[in-house]
Length: 89
Image (cartoon, rainbow, N blue to C red; front, side, top):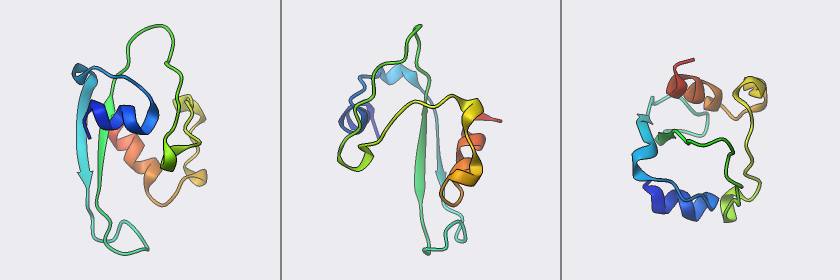
């Protein structure tokens, strides 16, 4: 997903230089729903204030959450481990 896709889904305008990493998670047993392949993109935003988020149709409840408030027990399947892997936590 490029910066156009990010803008479409979140309303954010992000420089292509903000992309710091991407990874495809494709372990055959990562989901009880069957084989699921997910590609994750890590963007690093700069500035003192986070931009407002305006989620699109399938992300209508998008919001910023401090990393320290993430709770893996409240996330779907392996999403917490995906985030921690991407951030090197």
